Length: 313
Image (cartoon, rainbow, N blue to C red):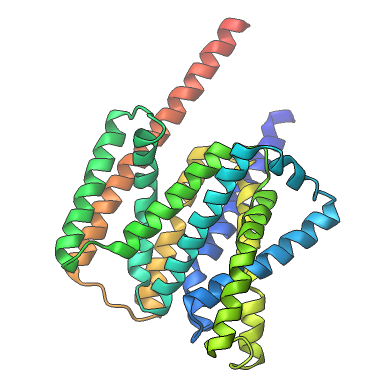
């Protein structure tokens, strides 16, 4: 405890966990590209079922299966988690479809837009009051979407859908509260989706569209490890969130879309026109304003805490 070394060590460890989590999420385009020619629906089904299996094993080892009874005993939390399940399923499906159809850069845009959409949802749904810089950032984000819509000749539906589904997922998780761990929440969400996943796999198999048994052992293994691929970064993120300030998490989250953009352009060969770079640049200006506002707000909070502590002493 002396000299604050344990606290600094916790922060360093948490930052490392967060960095690795966002690094793994940023590399997702390469994973989904590697499991082609699988379709988005088959990926969703396998991801749900294998993730549920991984979570169930971990929960059984930790003897934490009893949380299910706690959730079922609270209808409001059950409904919120069920809606969250559908939203994350939509997000996963749209994202995989974007990757396998060569729209990784637009998917990256969706995750750049996500913080702005989250702030906007806070105003519309939770009736939160925004600070001046937050209003300016949201307005610039809207302007970026309009600009990109004109450039595309249509709204950037993939980016908007990803941002809305993930921001909505976050909103539902906020309504659930912090009583469930990340592992418990993911377990319940995948359990809700499991019947849908089984039906999807059955339909795909009957139609002859399943690739699990037709593309070789390596392909089957890659699909099977989707549970680990899904669970590991989420658990690392949860470990990071307990150890580092929210501002640090907010800064780390931009690592994922940056890496996705690099994967799309440099590794998967997607074309980015100069007009599209300008659109991304407008979004980045909005994000810089959000970061500045978050840092200023955190500094004000620390000053107020120190003042309150000195007065109490």
